[in-house]
Image (cartoon, rainbow, N blue to C red; front, side):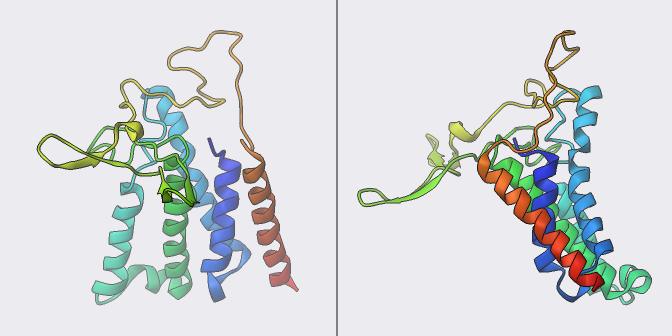
Length: 217
């Protein structure tokens, strides 16, 4: 699974582009920290088994703050965020939400899965797959495949549906097994699970570092 190192790197790369004129070291730090905080449900899962990749890895951690921010910035007569932090703070807030959605929740959803609609709907979905173009089958994608039920209702294919918080566990170095681990259980803290992610991680941190150095020149 993507480690917090990868998530934060990807968030930094996205934020470097999306912050625009509001870019500065403080803004990029806020965005990267916000992305990292999603993985705090690792510790929630220690006390409430099954909630890692559920408690904070769902659409509501983005949509609810996003709706509040939209209401505050567009519908209220006076924006609290803009009054206190200016346009700078408003832009940083939006970029933080976008990067959390893309660089963390979505990345995990397409890499072993997340509990997308928890707690409203307790079910993990895994959109891991591939997309390719062939000379015989045309464009093929296996990220999201639909099936039709007996009454004609389209539904997500069984291949993407996983368990619930009651029977699903994502191992981490802090919480390697569901329940108390054996004394000799290996605790693995991943950095990059593939060469591709390693390259993306290095490139992302390098880009953020370059922009920060450029800012101080």
